[in-house]
Structures are given as structure tokens and as C-alpha cells.
Length: 467
Image 1 (spheres, rainbow, N blue to C red):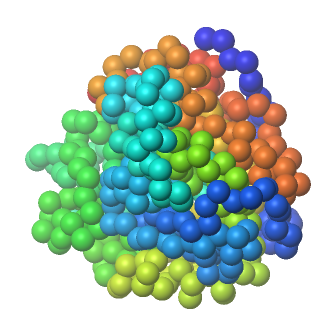
Image 2: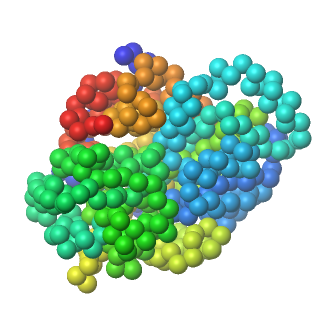
Image 3: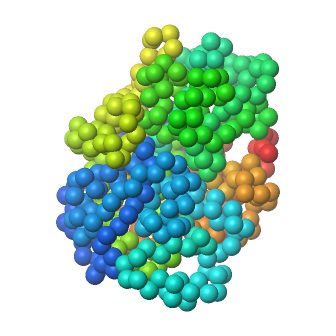
């Protein structure tokens, strides 16, 4: 498989994820003078969000005036599910949205892998159907494209009281990974029937990392559990009635069920794959084509907000902003500041919570760690990350994918374009990684198996547990 652009990082130390001693956790935030990208094609925007910690950059850009700074009047529209976000995006009600990193691939293959560029009447008919100036252009056949990353890491795997009574505990209480693997494997194999396990969406990174985690312990995600998509309210009910034994999603929902003494956190996804991509700012490819200057201004505001979020000096200002009802659901646990300050509560149904320092639980722009070094940063879209997701989609035969696509390079380039973000980042004097591909070294994964994006088939064929 020929790859034109490739960057191989030097091997990271196996000793762990030590942090560089630098101020503000290595944040590069500074007061950014507004950049004039040109005359905005549109100034009033509707951007979709889902109630989660990783919508924070969009909330900050709105509340701290960064959108206004770039000439934009933005309304953030809270949506109940990721599916609803995509429906509203395609209907034209939303200009852009916070969504899942894998969503562009999920939708693309869900419609049979049809390229928007192959739709011969797309540009001609789109313009004739949308003559009203300033109106968002919805199109069911358009592709969702990633504009920039919003964060890396940020999910947790939580288990119910049933698992606790069965002897399972947070990862820190085990002496070794092998001891944890043996305990978890024994518990799930001895259950009379596969328990339910909830996720927010099949394309959620929490789905892929949880399946990867289970596979590392010899637990078959297809045979030993029953994965199901549930909304937050249904997850709570499922824990209460015993229909699910756990779930994997973003914060602060995990902290809420811990506070309600319904669950404990077994594992963080940043300990399954250090520095994995999480949420993205996305639009339709048709919207990006029609509003390129507006897109740049929007991304510049969000990039500045991402930098602001990683600055420890700003932590006390973030929690009150994110806690507003128009952004997060009523009743959500309010431990925003603790997590943003680097403290994570794994919980404990014995009344003895396990609180650990996890400064990189969620990274919005940059923190100096052994897996995130300049010029790499959380907002840069690595095509190799999309390649990894594609291997997992094939592994679990999502969207009827049974073979790894031969034209993966072209597909990923189309769905994860980088030129616009590179232009915005240049205005922030940000250095960019050279190339779009990098090897994920063994130390990045729980099973110590490296991922080489040049060899996706070899990597895929290495999984014993698969659909």
C-alpha cells in the first residue's frame, strides 16, 4: 500500500506518561489578535452540541466572546443524541456541529461509500435549490467532513453494582494488568448470559476503545456482551433494573452515576490508547465549499477557545460557564472544575472513592506528555487516526464492511481535509506536523501492540477476536 506522506515518531519511553515540567501544563494559549480571513459569506451560525465535557471549547468560544471577535453571531443548539446532531446537520438547520471523530467514515460507508464528488448534479442543483442568501444548505447526500479536532482522550468505562459485587474493581486496585485481565475474564465468562452494555453511538470512540480493552482481556465483545445504543436516561434506568452491566461514554455522565452510587469507573480510555482522537468540529462538505471564509473564522474562534481550555489559570472560569442549562443537562454532576484541574474520581461502592491525578484526562489543545509533543496537538487531524478507526470498522463489520477498502487514502483525504485548518493554524503561528501519518508506538496501547498506518491489513489480521 503506497503512502506518500508519512511521519514516524521516535520510540517513546516505556516507563510511563510523565509530564514535562512546564507552566500551564504546556498550554500554548495566548491572546490572539483577530485575523481577517476576508469578507464573511455568513455571520449568523447555528452550531450543534451534545451535553458533554468535550463541548467546552464551543461553549467557551460563545461565552468568552471569541466567536464575536471574528465577526460571528453563534447560537449553540443542544441536541439529545449524536444521531440527532447528524440529522439536523444534513437538514440544514445546523451550519456545523460537535460530533464523533469516526462519524464522517460511519456515514460515508453507511450510504454505500458514495462520494459526494461523484454526485454529478450536486453543485448545479444545490445552488438552484438554495437561492435564499445566507440559508444553510442541507443535503442528505452530502458528506460530513471533519474541520478540526476538539479534544483527545475523555471517555470512561463504568460498571454497575453487579460487577462490584462480583469482585471487579477500578484498575488501580490491581497489582498488574495480568491480574486485572484474569479477574475480568473470569467474571464475564462465568455469567449465565451475556449482559447488556451501553454506548452512545456505534461510531463513538468509546465503542472502539472498549471493544479493544475487552479483547485485550480475552473477552469477546460480540459473544460475551450485548452492546446497545442508549440515551443517558435509558442508561440510568438500565443500571437500576439490571438490564446493563455498564456503559462507556464521555464525562460528566460517568461522574453522575458514581455520585448516585450506581457505578464505578473501571478504566479510562486514555489508558487503552494514549492520545486517541475524540470529538471534532464538523460540517457538510457542501457547506464548507459555499462558506470557506466563514469556516475559517469559526475555526479560528474555536482554536483559540481550545487553547484557553487547557490553561490551568482559566479552570475556575470554565465550570460556571459549562454548567449553564442551555449547554448541559439539568442534574448533571457539577464536578467540572475537579476534572478540568486534573483530578478524577473512579468511585467505589464501598464508600471509599478512588481519586487519582489525571491531568491529561482530556486535552483540548496541548499538554506536554510523552505521547503529545510539539508540533503535534489535539486539534490536528491525523489521517492515521482515521486509518485506525477504519481497521476497527472492518474488524467489527460495521456498515457491512468485511474487507479493508483499497482506496482508503482517497476516502480519508476527502472526509478529513486539512488545508483549511492548516491555513487557520498558520495565522496562530502554530507549527504543523510534517505529513498526515504517524506510527502509534507500542507504549500507546494497553496491549503494547504498535499501529503502523502503512500496514492496516497486517494490523487488522492480528486480531484474534473480531466479528
